[in-house]
Image (cartoon, rainbow, N blue to C red; front, side):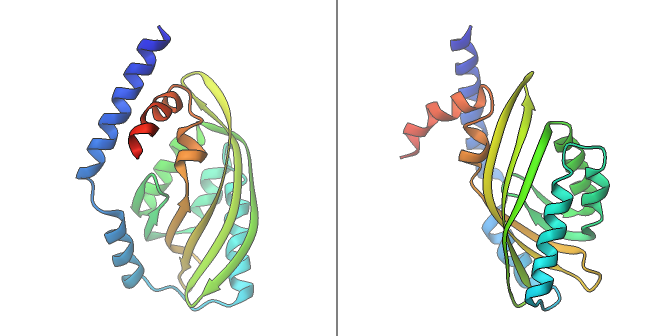
Length: 188
């Protein structure tokens, strides 16, 4: 039975990778959004505040308050790419947060550093959480950096997350991790 599950998940994983070719290029989308969306010029204190607000909201993930806390961070029109998903409206992002919120608990997000250049804050963070999927719970942890631009109301209008889903997610998810590890030799 375990072999059957592994083969099924491996097949689905492989098909998912092939299907990714039909999606638009994140690199092109990022370059376009980064050029077209301008935030307010930032200083050290503002970058630090953006980082603290970001970490504070995401520390409530997995609780009833998370969606409201995160919602207060974002403008209605925006560009968000979190490595796994891309959003251009707050409404779609909040729907994503609602789904995500159902699968996580015991979230801890730490601000490692906050820097800036022109209108971009670079928020270096570490996140750990329990992730529920297929009736199992797995402890997850990853490091990442988010490039964030805010408008004059201090609402996020641009966010590009940089983190490694291979280590932070794929290898740890029950069944999918096994399928992913079987595909790794073909990566070379």
